[in-house]
Amino acid sequence: MKQLVLTVIGKDKSGLVEQLATVINEYNGNWTGSNLSHLAGYFAGILQVEVAEPDLPSLTDALQSMADLDINIHHGTES
Image (tube, rainbow, N blue to C red):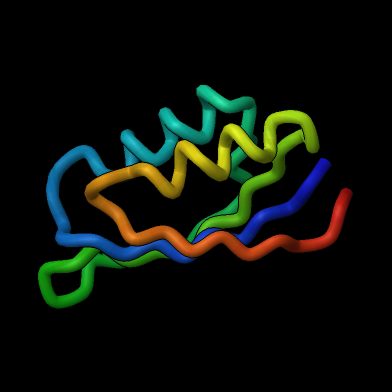
């Protein structure tokens, strides 16, 4: 499994965590840890996600195409 660390930020609004969780789930990712905050009208977070290598490109594309969040993807070590 490939480990990812995601940094996310966007204007805070209802449903952002659900949208993020849905995308991760749809591409067979496993949300293993996070630190999420509301800061000055923004939603900001750091997430750890694991995903099988074959699902990595699709998950990465889907995350980067989320319109409401600016997401940076950092590749960690394999588990």
